[in-house]
Image 1 (cartoon, rainbow, N blue to C red):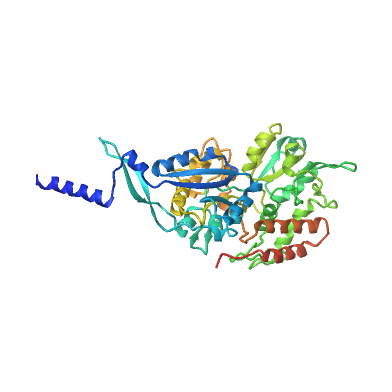
Image 2: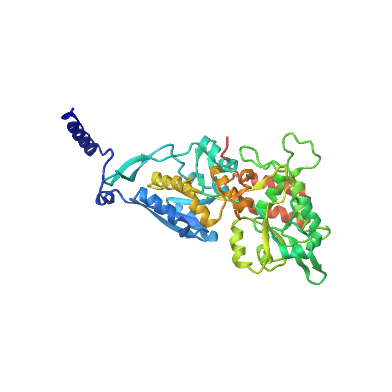
Length: 461
């Protein structure tokens, strides 16, 4: 026995050296790994929101460097499309959830499994750096369906089987309101339902024959001067029971949903509700296209209610610090059957990347429950992972973003076409045709459905 173990250990050491299995490396040897630089393009978030995530990834994979580049939203798609056309696309890039099908041909799907050289410190007495290929945990479509809200599976999975992207966070719509304007009108609480919104609108609206609308109750009824009007009208239609699209993505919100016995069409009825706020003949008249952008009007203290997302909170903290405002859950048609609206970004990999595995390794790392928390903390966004929701909602005192976090599981979106910006323009025209041209909502919605159908190139079976 005394002679066997030294020979066995010598043989094991020779095997490790010749095969590379479990290779122990000095820092010099680590630096000799092939250097990989991944270019990462995003919008809104500064690089410091990823400092810890990038550092922890680089510690595990010291040969991989992340080059982060932030763009303005209004320039982002032009830069991205030009980069793809000129074969200089980034390795990783971020997209709004409704843009995934627009970029599907440019995206490298998540691989089923692969390994990357990974650096570990091993040993108890003598610490040594060890580099070895380690498998990178990847999700199956089924796992994604279990671990993320339903809306993520709908938006980010191709043909119910191929994962195209992953979110780091999930944003939902909420109601921002001016507490001082509510107090002056004698309204103690923000509305919980859209019927309540209707009932308090006259109390919060101030008009004059000479100057028009001096104070607006809520930014509803417009197109160009209401941020995310597409989202708001879509949300109202869904809350009202409309089926926005079939499983293949084709729009049907001009029709009765299957099994419906109601007399009115829920899609056009929701459009009627929305546009009534811009109709001078209605008691809810509180908005027109001559007013400033809703966000600007809110910061001026002349708008009582504004529908927005969690990212609007940071904008209002800096631009409306003089306003006594707060945020409340999104009003509902039926509070017992809540429908929220999702507007979020996902992270994907370019099909033209020479380092697709390394890029997907970084996304898997960044989106994991172990590491995404630093991003969520710095951006104050709601988690996309279900496993992290109790960690936020269970905090005492309540987390300030609970209103958004609590809405994640019932959040929806619907557009799966190739031209989301065109679809948004079509919704704007649909709104204007009712408000300005007096077109019946049924006809306006039917025309919008036909126009949006032309933008579809469905991705679902």
